[in-house]
Image (cartoon, rainbow over all chains, first blue to last red; front, side, top):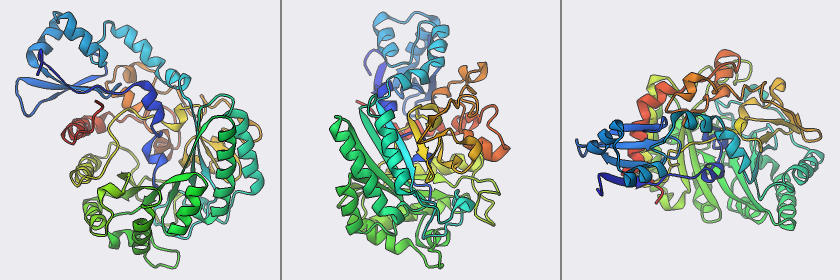
Length: 31
Length: 431
C-alpha cells in the first residue's frame, strides 16, 4: 500500500454507464 | 470530505484498513484507518486528496455534489450516442412457462411487415440524425417464431446504419428451443450476433417451469442447441429463480460444464428472481414471484448465486450503476402493434404507452414519475447512483401505482458489501 492508499479499481466514466445495457432484469432472459 | 456516495466496508484481511467504494463510479480502494482519520479531521495531504477525488471518493463541497447528482441522468442522456430498442415481434410462444410475466397478454399477435417498415422509418427519423449506434434486441413471446421478420428488420437497419456511418448491433432474447445452428447462421448473417437464453436451474426444475405447450421438457434440446450455437454467435445464459429452488441453481452450472458449455463458451451467466405480476396479467394460477428487492431471502440468494457463478469461472456483470429504460430518452420497447413503452413489463398496459411509431414519443416524465428520486431522502442516500428510485414496474405491480419510490436501501444494506468484495476477489475491476 503506497501512502496508505491501494487502488483496487479506478472505476468507470459516465460514458461507460451509457454503454452498458439498461436494467439487466429488463434486458436479459426473462422468459 | 468523503463523498456522500462513498461507502466504507471493513477490510477483513487488515484490521488497520478499510475498503472505500464509490456507488457513483464503482471505484474501490483500500485505505489505512490513519488516512481515513486524516480525511475526517480535514488534514489530508494534497496528493492523497487529489488521488481520492479523482476516484470520486472525496469531494470539496457536498452541496455541489448534490446538485451534480440532480443533473446526473440528464448528463447521461446528453452524452448518450446510442439508440436502443427491444422489439416485441410477437406475443406467441412454443413454451408454457409457469411464471411468464407476459402471461395473459400472450396470443397469436404478430408484428406485421407494415409495422416493421414503420419501425425502420422511425429509426431513420429519430436515430440516424442524432446517434452513432443502433442496438436492437429482438424479443417476444418467442422471437424465433418470427425469424423471417428478424431478418427483414435487421437487414434493413444494418443497411440504413451502414449508409449513414452508424454502428448496428442485433441481439435476441430467446427460449433457445428453436435456436439451431442453421437458425444461428441466418441470424448472424442478418447482423444478430448475440443470444440470451434462459435455463431455470438443472433439468428437472427447468422442465417443470419451462415445458413445451404439450408438457414435454425443453432442457435437453436447449442444451443441445447451445453447444452448437456458441460456436456461431455469442451466448449469454440467464436463469429465473424462486425462493423454493434457488439453492439448486449451482447444479445447472455444473451441468453446463459437464455438457461442454464451459466458461470460455459463454459470454455471461446471470440469475434473477422471478418477478411478480398482477393477477390480471400473470399466467392463470401463478401468484408467486418476487414483488420487491427487500425480501430477506433474496439477500442471501443473490449473493450466494453470484458467488457460485464466479467461483466456477463464468463471467458476470460487474457491480456498477445501471440505468432504467425509463430514465434514458432513447431506450424503448416497441410492441408488436407499434405502440412504444418504456419497460417490457408495461407492454399491453395502454395507459403506459408513451407513443407510437407514427407519432413518436410523448412526454412521459409525469406519467412514469421520472423525478421520484429528487427528494431529500434519496439525495442523501449513498445508494442513489445504484437505484434512482428503484423499479417503478415492481412498484406498479405491488401497489397498483408508480407514486413515490421503490426504495432498495434494505437490499443494499444487506448485500452491497458482499457484491463489492466478490468483484475484488475475482478481479472484476477497471484497471
